[in-house]
Amino acid sequence: MFQLARKNHLARNLIKMQKEFGKEYRFFPRTYLLPSEFGDFKASFGKANKPVYIVKPEAGCQGRGIFLTNTHEDLNPEDHYVVQKYIKNPLLIDELKFDCRLYVLVLSIDPMRVYLFKEGLARFSTDSYKQPTKKNLDNHYMHLTNYAINAKNKGKFIFNKNLDDIDQGHKRTFTSVLDHILENYDDGEAKVDTMMHKIEQIILKTLVSVQPSLKHHCNIPNKAQYSFDDMNLNPKSINSMCFEILGFDVLIDDKLKPWLIEINHAPSFATDTPFDFKIKKDVVADAIQLLGMTYKRKKRFVRSFKSHIAKRTLLKAKPTPNAKANNKAKPSVSASVQSPKIPAKEVPKKDYQEEFGYGSEDDEEEEEYEN
Image (cartoon, rainbow, N blue to C red; front, side, top):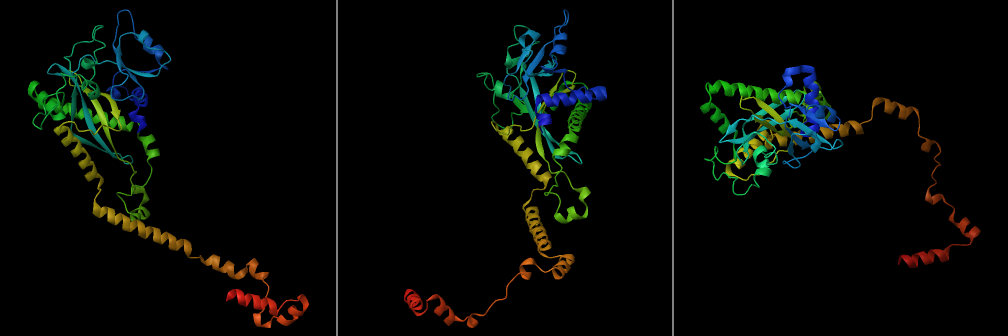
């Protein structure tokens, strides 16, 4: 899944699809891949235009190495970065910026089968949000929503102590965000449905952008879903052996438009709070259920596997009719040059004794050795 998990590969694939399909792929911020696109990045700064960008390492995680800038002079033209236009108008709850971690199970690639877990996490910054300026660009507790960063803001980060605190603290449930929209927007139910449809489209279109590559790497029969008899009867129906739980990070702006920020191929399953434990436990449990990983199916597969191996062994050991005919027609070389055996009783022992001068003394020594 490196085509999705690495920020530079994800951006490259989405930019390629955007050039081909236009507005269908306008769900991620304007992105520059440095150093190859440093010239275009530099040209985006004009006299009247002073955009703010968020700069990320190509393969970083947990917010390490991320910073905001409003000038190209902060970057070395030879360094490798993924630079995205900063979204200045995020949806705020309690005056705090947040993003959503959504869990997606990719069950197979060909055919593509994808499941979106109903619940997710909303990760909040710990300082009240304000528009980015020169004075607050360095305030990561305001502009970044990474849990690993904001948890270090001692005295401000609030942990949820029980399952009733799903709409409090700096880590909440995704459904609490939906409830906030329902309560605070006119015709909130229709807007939530529209937003969720857009999120589903983001997930599907992102996976479609790398499906050919994933199909090439995952073109292995899925033994968990098909027995060996099924494989022999209908090999075209065999599923690709791949499943993975991905973490899609989505930011919602004040117009309720979802933006894809990044994808994690190994989302954290650490459980620091009670509802954190419940959500992630349910994610894993649902994935196991969808995969059909039961003890009964395991026993059936092991039995089928042993039977298949036994049949293959018998087929290899059993000679073919052509091989039998060839063996009869052509005697082996060793048989043609083999000399006839002389029975031991016909060997003239006395003649050898007289000719080479050995006999009874040697026999006596052998008898003593044996005794």
